[in-house]
Length: 284
Image (cartoon, rainbow, N blue to C red; front, side, top):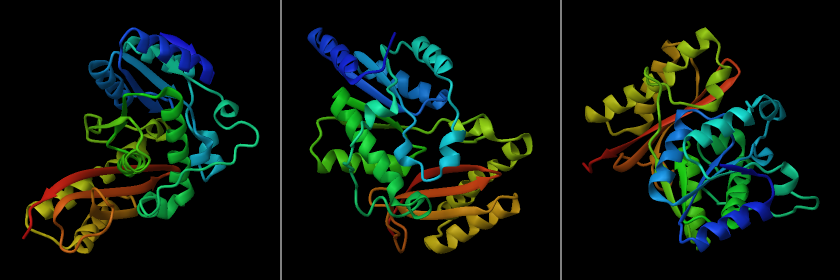
């Protein structure tokens, strides 16, 4: 595996790979790798002939400077983990390489950037995501890009971005990877204290309560969300939001039907966590 930091170098690596007839897979990340990231690398390794992992903590998607400063970083560890997974290139650019002096362009996917996390982090958060993903797609020109289902709203936005801008890349969304007790893996989990780590399971419990209610015939999304919120409260966590929306459009549905995204977010101590599950609800 090679580590490259410039756009010119990663483009050169892609040209050489394509000259050998290889398809190119991209795994966009912000580093602090865990088993979820590794599962995306393995999927890319299985489906493509040349795997690039980008490692860039994107300042444009942080609305809180403290959160940006606290985001875990350990490039040497990440590089060793990526190499062990057979990654070909680790693209680790500087902020100046991605956003050079005078940078003045942004990409926004309207409407999809407003609900769920957009309502609390601001639509500028997903504008930052869409902008950097567009840049990475233009720089790397992957055949396939791999994202995790844990960041469900991000995945929906990227798919719409690719469709609307006719970008020649296939988006693969891979299942959420969880700890043995059900907690969704996240780079932020390392910031949880011992007691906070226990309380963090409230997010998974809230999803379980919502799922059980739907399986038992409930179709009122507002009522189901209240049940999940109460279940989280009883375990010491106040939900930032619990939403049941269309998995494609992120809009509430009444009554619930089709592919439903049940999404939750909460602060556990100073750490903001998200989780979700997609449930197919048969029409009544």
